[in-house]
Length: 244
Length: 295
Ligand SMILES: Nc1ncnc2c1ncn2[C@@H]1O[C@H](COP(=O)(O)OP(=O)(O)OP(=O)(O)O)[C@@H](O)[C@H]1O
Ligand SMILES: [Mg+2]
Image 1 (cartoon, chains in turn purple, red):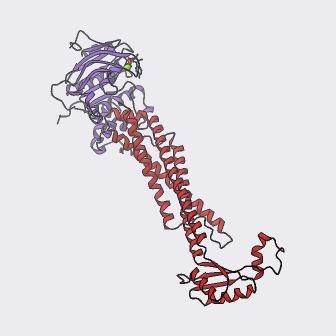
Image 2: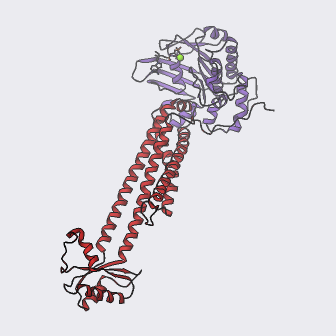
């Protein structure tokens, strides 16, 4: 349906109800103390936000909550207009399919090739090899890994791994893209290139949330940012978000 | 116009080899081996008991108990019995043979020559012979020969009972082995799952259904179970076959160690697919349990 533009990806654009809504959310690991406190956050379709904060502030934890790897200890998490507390396991899986994630540790599977790692979300959701082969190759070529399709992830540099992780996050044309430090290991030029990929995705309708330390990059992008400070969310001057 | 080498989808998303698969493979193979051996031995003991019972049913023993002219009474009894229909063979023991039979109890040479000895006559019946214990007793009584007739019914009954118990025990042992196999597979799947937690988590996070993840493990363990089952069953057939050949060499006695009839072959053939199925099902259950514990 969407015409091919620069980036070989194009999400299905939804209607105008929020993609993500967190209401008074707190979170903790096991029986530890709360890591996040009273988070209120609302992302509309097409939003593009950075998430900043000191190391240990809880950025990854907040993202984990959003991509449904962890439950809130209190409050509500709504994704695509669904209260996740009320979702069946199957519904949760269906929600996860609409979210692309670049994990902080990449989470590449060492026993699969670069191609198979990127194709994983498609394969895991029942798509046929013949239907996605071209797309995956095109995408990997675009992130500069066209010559590494058969490589094992262990043999890649940090930056190359990161690009594989990004390719895997965007290959399913997600409605919501979550990236945890996606440019931490690449040179500035590749960093800008990857940011362009995210912008391109965003322009095509994906909602994007990127956690980053790189304040220079954040500023250069001109996108608004949310700031986490000891588990509490503060909207930066540029944005109105967080206050309900 | 593609310049890339062709890409083929991997059969499994799980690592083909993980550390605990080797030991698991051998444990399953050994369990299948033991299960096949005990099943085949049970099968053989059943066959042997059946054959023995048939032999016992075809044979009777008569003991002449007249105190005088025992040998002569025995000869005339034999003659009377031979005259009956359906008698294959009648053999009268000589006094010397009868003495030899008693020697283990009384000691050789301790039997005085004038001591009257019961003289045994062994009778082999033809198949479906109309003659039974009562018929022989009747003809002997009519001719005033005092004798006891034994048709080994007690023996046959005892043998039948012990064969029955043997079967019961081997079915019990088999059930335990199968339970052990299932427990071991379940345990190993959990371990494999823990070791492949990254794969499970990643699949989970990209939106794979639990059933998809379970099917990946199921396939892997079905193939592992099948291979281990094949090895175990083949080893069982081989070991018992070789044992049989070694035991039979130089004798023409059919020793009842191992008898590969159709049912025996069936047991060996069905063991590997059965193992594969059991492994797959156990894996599926273990995965489902582990996944339920995830958010
Ligand atoms: N799995 C976990 N179990 C227990 N505590 C955890 C776990 N993961 C993170 N934490 C704790 O939660 C807090 C927030 O961690 P988090 O990873 O969200 O920080 P972050 O902002 O992403 O940091 P960084 O910028 O270094 O990635 C930290 O104090 C950390 O120790
Ligand atoms: Mg982090």
